[in-house]
Image (cartoon, rainbow, N blue to C red; front, top):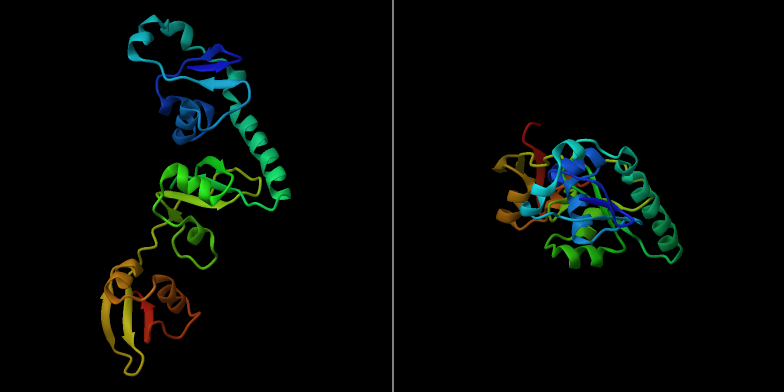
Amino acid sequence: MQYFNDKPVNFFESSVHAAKLLNVSVGAVRNYISGKSHIEGYRFEKMDSIHTYDIDPELYNIFSEEHLSIKSLLLKQCREKTIARNKQGVKRICQYDKEGHFIKVYDSIAEAQNELHLQGNISHVLSDDNISKSAGGFQWKYDNGDYSDIAPLKNNGKAVAQISSSSGKIIAKFESMAEAERKTGIDHRQIWKCCQGLHKTSGGFVWKYEEE
């Protein structure tokens, strides 16, 4: 149930249904319900199944359109916080799902990692030379006030070949740079730089994408 100034304005069958009509991600809806995210004047409440028996289906099939446009309010609120935060010299970060849908803004990397209990290193994702664009199953970028959806996460699991720098012969092939790092101990970011032509060798070897 969606409330405005503590008055019920819209009933949704599920979080997925709410996300579709509100034009936000399912994760964002769940954050509203749990109280992790807040939009001034609005609150969301998860209804127990027993309470839904009191809902008149015909009445709640008619949606209050004005209260479905909360995304603009959310983004305006985020922009205002970003401007204030940037003046203090602290960088905020944006969280997106793998499909590129905006979820939430965090005041810092530490706040995001603590709240979500992430094992992935967000700071590496935000650096320029990282080949993976996700951490903890999410995409991340520094907050610049633009909360439109971003490109979906692409699979960077290209096969790579490990080549002798002296003979030019292929030593081994790996299904991905992650596998190459696990089996050789050579940092996947250095392997990527070699495949991109930024370095001649990495770990004493030449590296190329297998299709090359």
